Length: 187
Image (tube, rainbow, N blue to C red):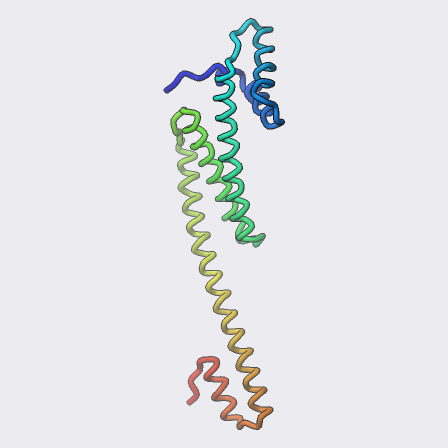
């Protein structure tokens, strides 16, 4: 494993401050000047421009991956709507995203991928729950489609009966037409 860079060895508060400056739109040189001014005051070795550039590239890459993951989650949630049944599904997506983000961040930073038993269990349970939610969603859609088809058939049968009666058809003929539309055999 590679040795941590000078920036990676800085206190977390300083690294966060660097990230905040980057998000605020400061240039590499502006950030570098601010960080090195503090280091000069402490008598520490200055951080190089190339070192700062590499660090900011990592921050930008992490930020981009996080934005893409959020866009995917937002698209999925928008597609699912605000149905209460989907809360578990959305929660599992968010949990999975968090774990996957941590794994990908560790890999990008060269720390190696670490998945402790708690996170492994979280991933396994989230996948299981997503699978169950997906199956439930498919079944729900199928039920809705069946109800819609039955409702359309009943409406068509009612309309056919009304039209047949208006045109003077016998009650037996009307009932046979309705049974045919509804898929019922007439004895």
